[in-house]
Length: 274
Image (tube, rainbow, N blue to C red; front, side, top):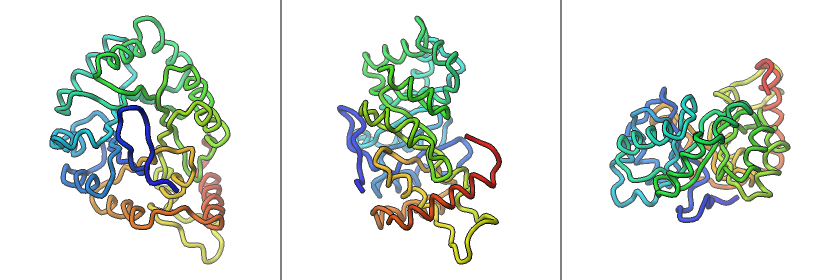
């Protein structure tokens, strides 16, 4: 199981376990720097001032060792709106560039068409890339088949999609497309909002629910995933997640099967969702 992946030209290799903030998690800059010292250099920022944004401004010469991804709100999908937002974020982060500017939660064909229309968000991102303000254009979605089609358009450099043991549809709907195109995939919701850490009524006798680090290991065990994002709430959760770095190895077939089965039980007990 490879520990690092290469996302794009001019970017440093990144650890396949990445760090994200959601706006409701409590990591301070010291925690983020500690993760960096342990090798975590793909940082996904939510766009709200927090410990991660503070840490970016403190990197100094080490900034070139981090791949910084930014979630861009798609409510304003105009070219000028995107450029204004990028300018504001660059000032907030005290950096000269965003490595991956991600159109966040694009969930319908209408949204996509508005973004790629003349004067739309895509035009703004392409202009920003030409100016060196961003390096890659990403897109985040829950809609697997739509996202796969948008990725095949040639306008997207990176796709961020939900993937975990309870949501494995990307294996059929997304990964064949991204693999063929050589497009990196960043997986989010790797713990299924914490559901995979809980037991279910259908668990077999003696079954021990795997730790968070092992659920991230499950995601990274799929070679189609370039980065699995964690979003720990506090230093303690971060330390638990980072334990994967101490035993960086693939899961056995027996472990993978047991985790898929638990994922199916979690899926079945959580109601209807794709």
